[in-house]
Amino acid sequence: MKKLYRIKENDEIIRVLKKKQTVGNKYFVIYKSENNQMINFRYAVSVNKKFGNAVKRNHIKRQVRSIIHDCSKDFEKMDIFIVIKLAARDLKFNETEKNITRLLHKAKMFKRRAHEEV
Image (cartoon, rainbow, N blue to C red):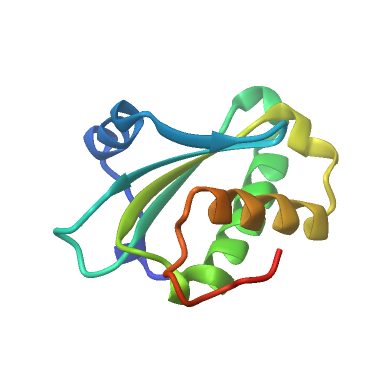
């Protein structure tokens, strides 16, 4: 996924966190905030160091980015920040995908016409 879809600045992540619009479950928390200034959505992913070594942390981040990339054509113009909890260590890819897409639906990230399943 292109870098223009990523939130890199710490100030922008803090702005998303301050909005306090969250959805979450045992494995993930998604913070969101509207972003009408950009032409597309943007996202950031965070994993605690207690999750495991760098290989494990990067692996789960790649999985989450892949899931976001697959769904991204139907997203509203928003900034999202995904926090991966320690409990997600034991999830398989299909379980991770199911949990992320459910949370994205719950957060109303998709455009009105798209993705009526789940």
